[in-house]
Image (cartoon, rainbow, N blue to C red; front, top):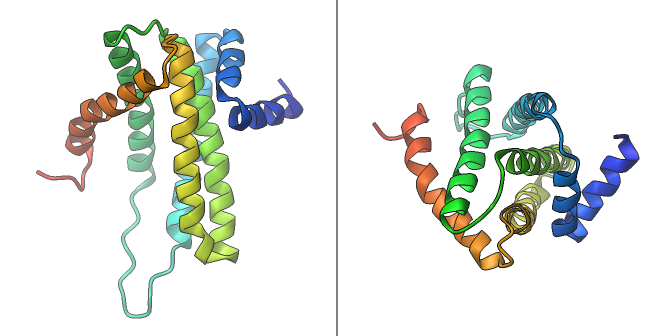
Length: 188
């Protein structure tokens, strides 16, 4: 894989996410590569997230929110990614899906890398044109949902984006209690 392949795959992911999903799953990456990519995605996500947190300026006289420690951000990022992979796998199978763990892992990691790139653009925009930050985050969230619907549809071989949407909604219901339980600032 070279940078032109990755760039073309990124463009394909936006234009035709179903085809991108098929190509990613056809790579049949080994577990070592997947876990290394997973770790890299977690670290890069942490770096970009901390960069965005540091770039947000508060109005004069308002206290700035305390930054979370790097290990907490790393653990939360890794936990959220793994929880989403497992929830998408189990809920999808309950709905008749056929996805394999490795397929969902490669698709989730790829989407995470694309989201990291979008967050890096957001970080640069927030430093130069701060009023565009919220619009960029909203556009990233909508595009991520669109891509995730197609990725889940291809991985589980549903043939229906509605089933993929159901997987996302039901996975959120499964994941929310765990996220609240594991969040140090969550309810007691």
